[in-house]
Amino acid sequence: MARTRFIFSGAGGQGVITAAVILGEAAALHEGLNAVQAQSYGPEARGGASRAELIISDDVINFPRVNNANVLVCLTQEAYNRYYPHIRPGGLLVTDSKLVTPLSKVDARQVPLPLFKTAMETVGEPVTLNICMLGAVVAITGIVKNGSVEKVIETRIPGEFLEVNRKAFSLGYELGLPHAG
Amino acid sequence: MARTRFIFSGAGGQGVITAAVILGEAAALHEGLNAVQAQSYGPEARGGASRAELIISDDVINFPRVNNANVLVCLTQEAYNRYYPHIRPGGLLVTDSKLVTPLSKVDARQVPLPLFKTAMETVGEPVTLNICMLGAVVAITGIVKNGSVEKVIETRIPGEFLEVNRKAFSLGYELGLPHAG
Image (cartoon, rainbow over all chains, first blue to last red; front, side, top):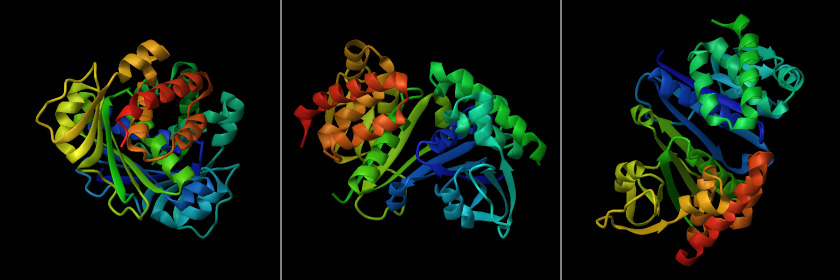
């Protein structure tokens, strides 16, 4: 698998850090891979943008930052406008189809998905958007097994919110599957 | 202030990553500082240890990893045994006084505090241990104002758990204050 570099971006409060932490733990705890997860906060954080980075590799990870991602997720237009230049040519760019209008000039496989709509209407809990997104990313990339992520979700998400997040993950996975490979 | 490097360590599920994320956001969003927060997962994660790193600086942060910390927190004996060599000489080493027996040979200011007891007995919610710890660290180091952290706690911790975490932060702050400076 070599090395896959992710950037999950959106607005503060959308839970992109939690999504990155969960995926990193799934890879390391249940699939024997190495992972480094990081976020940096500078002036841009004060504008309300949020960005979480994750590297997953079967080898040692020396430099833990992601400048250019194989997989970029943008959950807001602001995040898209800021981060689309950080996708590697030919990479995967997942956006929310309601919240983001993609540009045609980007050299990437752009996959807009109704993540927010699913979290809002089908799950009925907008806070599950991040986990719905994670389901889609796992389905499209095949980076880890969905069961590995579900195990981490069970340990990381507190009681009251577990069931809706399980549902969001599963629905996101379904949304992503037709775009796999 | 130059640069302060933190390592928060403990067992998986103790919430050391959440504590580091909250402190990083408090520094960046409410005090105009830069912060980088990271965790790496390798073979040691599969042993159940958890380690979150945080750098806070008033300057640009180029290399985001912490090899040796100015402030090290250990919430389990296993974490202590593994990470005490990573404290800088003369640094601050905060431990839980019930869960960790410190070594005398460590060149650091060691501050054992009844964090677990406070979370368990006074707050009545053991899951607030991480936020109780954060209160103590903020009081001892003065790295940010307690109000800055409280603002982030309000946005990051979901409804049901907010009040107990507020209480845990406040009690941890009280525990730390006599050791400030």
